[in-house]
Length: 84
Image (tube, rainbow, N blue to C red; front, top):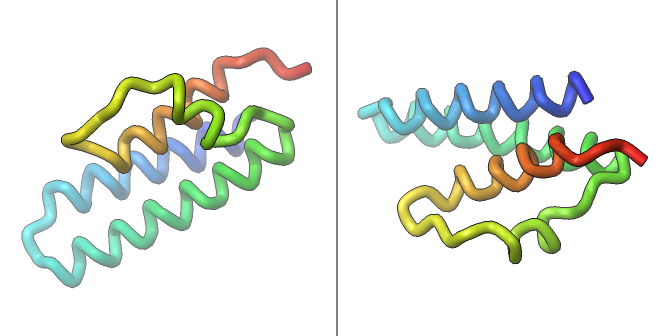
């Protein structure tokens, strides 16, 4: 579980940096880095047998101001589930 949460933390860090960045090119690079960490977290979640994003997504309230955060929240909810 540690690697999963570390990937999510890094994704959040890069997303935060991207949100504060004014330079569009650098902002895009930060967003790519965040997406890469989210992808790693998704693969790790699958290895742990945690529910997929599609099933969790239906249970989350819509977040029109931050769709990227919604994806990360899906993983945060999944990490709170007990491992079976």
